[in-house]
Image (cartoon, rainbow, N blue to C red; front, side, top):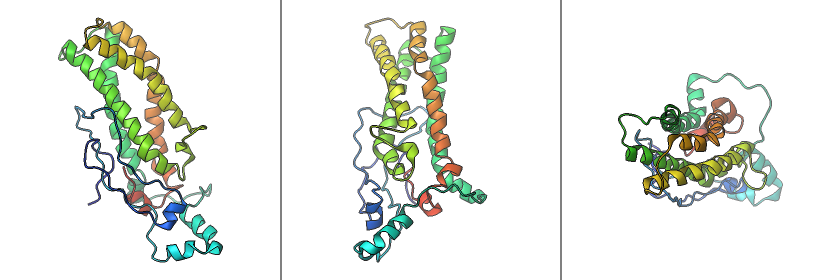
Length: 255
């Protein structure tokens, strides 16, 4: 059974695969070994792992010969990387919807963990009282761990998932004129970094935890975080993904 790419950050190292000429022409990036600054474990056991990424382009024994012929190159590229279509699409069967929606389903599971932890932290700030089941140390560490997990999640997306999707989907374009989802990452970290710095000072005894101060730091980026968590899942949903990928390609997706 094919293993998913994202289930455990510190899982087995990724093995590079050789792309067919079609995949090379589409510039579908190979996956490098990730470099992440934080450890990644979650209380809900939502873990990331790296498995071997299957080649999205179909294997074709004569692809190399065809690509060497300039007269057939344009046709092959068009077949391998079709442009999105605005034509009305047929209704998906239940199985087809499951396949096309698989990336959204997995991503939403990760996002639900972030939503749950955020709600716990923010509720404590709003009520000016941390959960009765958590000590001060546990509460602060939960906040720091939340920051580590979110930073790692974004690093994996930007290094491995988004570049592959961006070969056909403008919603994941990176670079100078990055797509909205990428810009949201930057906006999130503009507030996340200060939030994490404050919690670390509380952990190290440099300052005393004040829940009203913590809430103020969360308010600066909470709106963009929640928008991003919902929008990213919607973008990976079946009705959007079917515009760019075939069923077989979706079955090979690394998430």
